[in-house]
Image 1: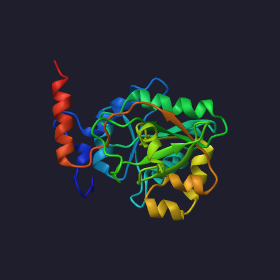
Image 2: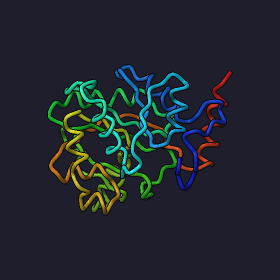
Image 3: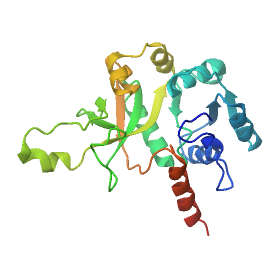
Image 4: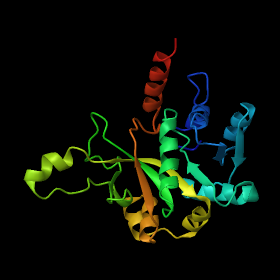
Length: 243
């Protein structure tokens, strides 16, 4: 609720439905999801979710990131969540999230039993600028695991003769994560790492501590809602799709 660029955005309801409830709808539409829990430090959000028939948990407001908040939820749920469960962290400001991306990130973790967590990489949307530091990039190994994430364009193409072929299909990171339940507590307990601090990307903490991240390549358009203007554009798209 305290977003500096868009105060109160989780409960913006120009569609007739609070934005956080649109996100819940998208998560429920994923075929591999068994349970959806909204975690937030704001009682207003909890009330709206519960009134809509959803499950929500009021968490502390001291968390530095979503992973830390998720770890609190799992600690409090305790044995309700089986040790071998896969837990997906969906950001609460993505009302157009593709449910298929949720299924893809779960499948990536299931198919790589040695990976600690999984995330999504996508081809660029038309008009995206690979030089934009707000768009995170990822490079992967031959077995489909993340080698590095950066706000800079990676990889750097040194040979101009290779530039067109190599640079035509960089991968854009999508901030959707699936974790093995037993790994999440370890991840949240690690201190902020040097590269994480430099790039402001918490997933680098995993790589710096020797963890492994499976990457599913899956088309994923759009991103989270950060400003009133982005929300207005979402409302316009949503309205255009209505009969």
